[in-house]
Length: 101
Image (tube, rainbow, N blue to C red; front, side, top):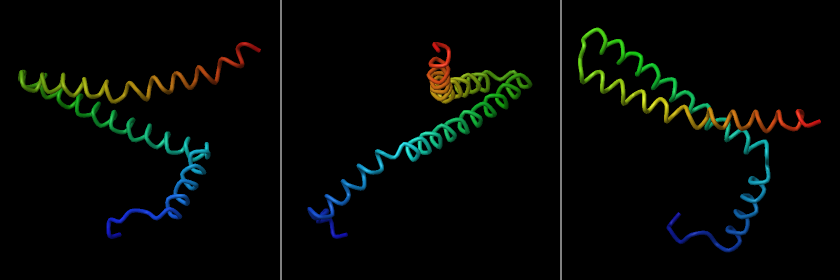
């Protein structure tokens, strides 16, 4: 594209496509679950790094490794907490209607 932007016709077509995609609940659910999986995978990576740094800090009694372990632990918690909270909320929303019946 030469940077001129979209024509009116193209802009209307794009808006119609976007509106249709926003209404597709299955697609939205799939995209959100993919994001959750990636975040959970990163939390697993950070957990492994934390464990490795903890073992290394314990064996060598290195203050730098201990601080690295603390930083990795903080990243693990920050990465894992949002998907965990979202999952708990999702389960509560699913369970509540049945409990009231």
